[in-house]
Length: 82
Image: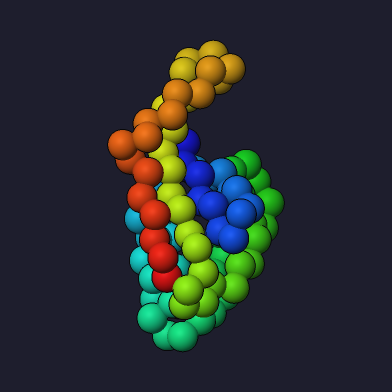
């Protein structure tokens, strides 16, 4: 499972997130823009305005088969100061 933290708010995302990371980076390079963050389960998603200087953190977690336990894979956490 992937977690995107934007300005202190957490968004949990389905795999893959590579395309979403690219869209966010493009929006920031353009001076700012809206990017639709997909929902974890169904629905339209959330439009977030990304701009230069906005704190963005990506985290990846491994979810066990039962879904009840979440293991933090701290080595995969990357902070982007956009």
